[in-house]
Length: 137
Image (cartoon, rainbow, N blue to C red; front, side):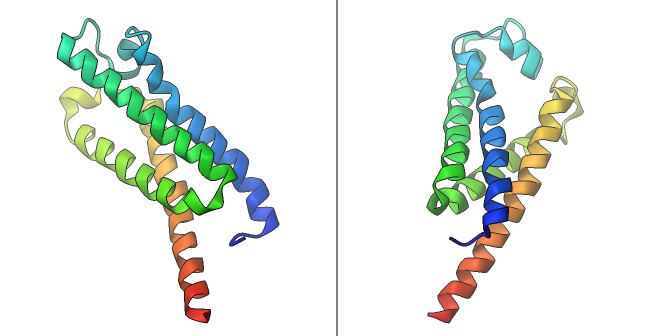
């Protein structure tokens, strides 16, 4: 175990919450009406709807990986790096464009920023600890 028992106790529920909330865009797969609330897209063109529903599926997979990481430490680094890369890319594409930024829920932006910080710090910690452990061999 790379983290202390105390850190594990705090990290597991945090990862579960981050993972579960990350999966929420998957609701668009079965209810396209959520696209209006989450992305400000009402009555999307069929391709736009399909792409946003596909994004929901990818978010489901990412959220599941984060939840899995809560209980299976060997996947934590991959899940954290994947989430940081995905969420950072999304914000980098959305935030510079005021025409689309205004349609995005502010809660979603702040949640992604929080995830990037928390999971980024976790990745740095894991890389530091694994680097130290590898060096001691």
